[in-house]
Image (tube, rainbow, N blue to C red; front, side, top):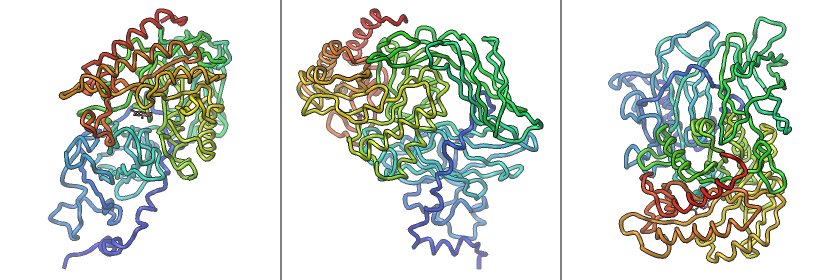
Length: 605
Ligand code: GCB
């Protein structure tokens, strides 16, 4: 007889257990254990990971994560998968893009790899960071469950301190991209449900006493001469007066922040050159706490609204934007630096000063690059269409995604708007849920605008959404000429609405298919799409409270729910086809319109 382990008994019992997943749904990897990573040394774990899709969650039921890395021929139990040998997948990637059998796979998938550990110091702390994994990611180290993270586009941190062996360790992640009723987004979206670890995965080590968080901003009081700094630390230091020293050499600034219970704040006088699209000035900031040191590149600017105006550093601006998804024919949701540079290059060719990052948190490189290139950003969480607004667990998930996005990017000058949602029905439950998200955004960040893509009453042709009164500026998606037939209704909308705040058109557009078999006229033709743009431009120019537009969308993107003969799994509203090269006529119309606005702009760029 083979020698069986305690797992064998469980292998039978688990067949009848439908609560098998409860212990793994702690959502304890959340905004509370985020770690500030700017300037830290990171060890990449990108590369090939052992991989298996697991439709029935057999891995959680049978506890695959407890298996020892024994050679296959020495196994004593008939396990249904061996996490240590077999097929591999590159990380980062989306599994849909790796094998055609996995294209529509929705469920759990297991990632395993070895990692060799040698401590650098006795008190060091060790963290695993994953830039993003879609949607639920459970992390295990040497057979032990560390925790799970909800939310497909924000980073997660799992701490391994005290759980590592010197030498070989086994890291496992179980990533699940199921669409369920309680998630954010819920089940129905107009973008593809990719799965997997699709951003960088890495190890970050810190000294025992560490800087958890560093947040800086120009005090939004129209004086432009004070910088506010908040720090958070952890761990004991040999001093009765623990302190963090923050310096910005270029401003000759060096200040000491005294800590109470690991937290400290300061407001200091400084007159930084202000960040703007025209001159995206960034300063190197260094923060030191005992042996720990972090850095960041930070721009200082003030964004505010005044009546129906949006003011950047006191001057009114018009947001000449374009919406964009993270998507790629070959890579799915994986973003490369080249892809990002091309995206911003195309935005600049359009004469944009602004991008809407729809409908979830984009890669951190995107906001970093926007800081450097001088583009303004609308950043968003996927509170999209139907959401279970009554469910407190859903709220916790949405709020956590919002806080993670804010904590990751609140030092980015380019980000001027946090959006808390898109086109959600105006119910009491939704109003309570989203108004609370607005409050949370303001609590975590006092120097950005909060918005959402709100609703239009199409029967009355006016902006009508109770959420609007909670926002700093109102986003509306309108598709006159596409979903709404009558263009004159757009003019009526303009006349019937009398907002006391700035409005941005967060979406407008039309599908235009230019591939083989493309129609030459009518819906889905390139010429019809151009006509929609022509009229939109003409009408919007007459609505003076509109302070920005971000038409839908820069590139065509993949989506399951669009399957007509011109779509075939793609949303064709891109101004550029899915090859990310071929421009449609509407691209040039918008570029021309923006060029005119730019030359008239009161904000010099
Ligand atoms: C919308 C949605 C967006 C869709 C777009 C469309 O209103 O916000 O996610 O992709 O319309 O193409 O229908």
